[in-house]
Length: 180
Image (cartoon, rainbow, N blue to C red; front, side, top):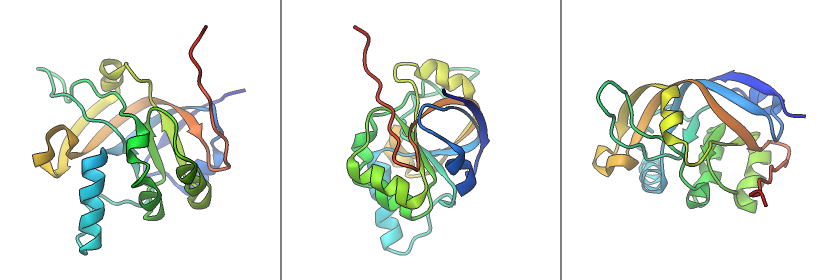
């Protein structure tokens, strides 16, 4: 039986250990956007001793490339990107303190192993619902790599951002299949 759980960022270890696959999460606070180009640059900078543009401890990273904000809005459509594109970078991000990632699709066996090892979680956002998800985003600021355009690292302020626990810190995995 799934539960609905309200969480605020930054996430603590006990927050993640309370979650189980299938739980519904309403997330509030500050999250950070990054897709593959931003992950690559962020990790290269860290290798060169450059501080990250946000505190990685307890951070939540959303795999999204939002569209420009229409008049009167802080952001345009903000639907999730396929998470497997970030699988090469995800283990290290979790080892550096990231507590959760948000995207769509399945994760590799290596990512699922690291989630258990680092007591982290993978949350799913509804693909194809970017315009609706953007209504839960109350603030948006570019933090780094502005030249990457939509792939720049942004800080988003979210309020009751609706998510589903796809992979928990205990090895649980939610399988979602299309209807017949």
